[in-house]
Image (tube, rainbow, N blue to C red):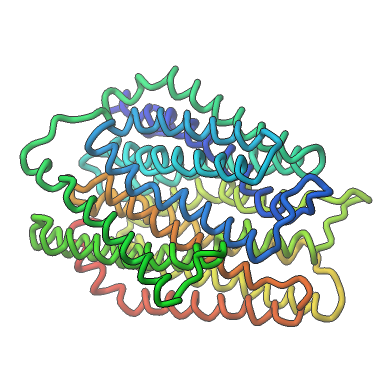
Length: 493
């Protein structure tokens, strides 16, 4: 066992996944920090010159697609590649996507780069998390949660580095040089992954499927879902419920599709997935966690859209006469993660030893309430702006502190809980579903940011207060139903 745990007391393979994810997040969050700023910058200043509503919708669709594609990415790993190869192929696509973004050119080239990054992340993201869970086979307690907290440090170390380097290069030197730096980050991640893949010792390789698993993962449902999605899009357009001629209309239809397809997907597995009674209850818990996560990310992911625009347009960013890039303020979230993740990871283990570790629904409630408190801070910051003053950076810093504490109690814990609750035959698909929650949250965040009008300052406090109300309300609901949810989880802690 001593040899097994060799990375901060955890499996050696965790180090491989830690640094691979670190470099992938360097590229993703680095590019995300400048994405909406680049799109809204006038063409005369070498940006795309899109209006805020269109840019925010594109931002929401892209960040949503990144996580929505985790569902087919999980299916491909379960049925064709295995997780290890899915990570490798995904990393290559991500690197190529950032290289395309680094090429100055038309809007079409820009969108092609975004598509490559989204497809690559859909392959890499759910499967690297699945392998982290597989490193702790048989351990469904606090140590697995602690392992995910350490893994989460890698995510945020990459985010901190990426948002610093890419924001500076993109905003202060050249937008496309920033995108190129993101490609270099993913390239380093691929090299590291290839050199150290032996530490995984076969975990995540393609396994020969039993007849039961083959039956559970057949293609019929996937084909039906594709047909269903196409029909639903047609009906939405036919009855003028969405306008597919605008970026916002496409984003709205994508959000409706995600909700409906997710409901149908869970219903299909629940009713005809060959699950036992206890597995059905645990899948239902995953569905509830999906709802909580989507609501949390709908607020949290405004860091790259609404809060980024607030930082650019209404925040005093001068230090000793130098104006910081707007995107660099997002670094406070990963900085707080790096500082606090080890504390939270050890806290869960210590509390578990005393039989005091809060159950997953309680942690989700806390996460949603912390997200709401962060926007309550921004409500008062917006009030300062309404009076005709620029807000100090401290408002955003405190907001990111609240959001970070919420993230640490919800995101790594939700990842860990999903790996513990998921039926084995749907393992990677359930990880994909977890990231679909992030997709939905990102889409909502992008659509919300479309209502952010720099010329109408008076509306901003009410926008922020609406996030406070829905975040706090659902946080309280998770607290109220924590008992039944805990019971449905069975032996999973």
